[in-house]
Length: 262
Ligand SMILES: [Zn+2]
Image 1 (cartoon, rainbow, N blue to C red):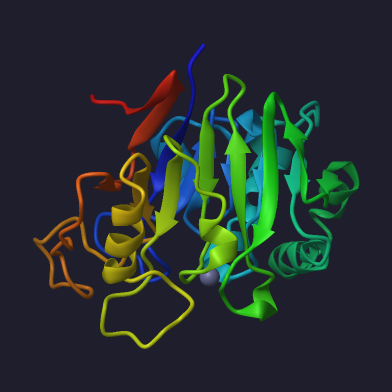
Image 2: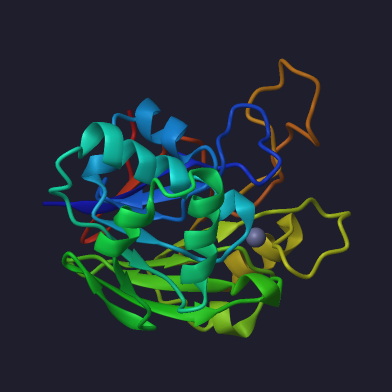
């Protein structure tokens, strides 16, 4: 069986036209983050909250966590009423009270029993299903516990997820030949931020690693130019090994990473 990753959303916090919040899922059952649009994205691509075995959190910004109450509420009252499905959450230890808090604010009392059943895993490396992961710190607002992940597919593919991060060694030192690198492009060139990648950062790192495929997500670029622009609908120009992701894109690993064409 080929294993892989699908983009359920590819937009940054500001929801550029035609994109939901950046969201990736491994093998259609292990979610990376839970943005406000997560349930909408999952419905669109036929994934039920009850299908989820694992949710892996990169950091605690709202566009990465505020979808959790809706996922848990849906599981409890619709897709897993009997409570038969297990759910594992992989996150930094300090993330747990934040996640419990947002669920308590959203639905006081209703989700407490869900948290009693969730298996929390705080280890910096470990496994879920047949996948392996390592978590590492990245360059983003320290107040939100920012991390990236390196995943290994059951058949040996390497997948790196930047979370939200500016350029930094702790992220780049994970790069291996032939890996797939899911990399955020949170801000345009003119924004004075060290905490996100800009188009020029992506050009520079991708030129250094021509054998790595860079799948760009968490982008500021509108998909649909029919509306007034959010910021811009023009994609930056990048080397050939950079692919600007669209919602619904998916990649499979079998000997090498390949993008599915529908
Ligand atoms: Zn962030």
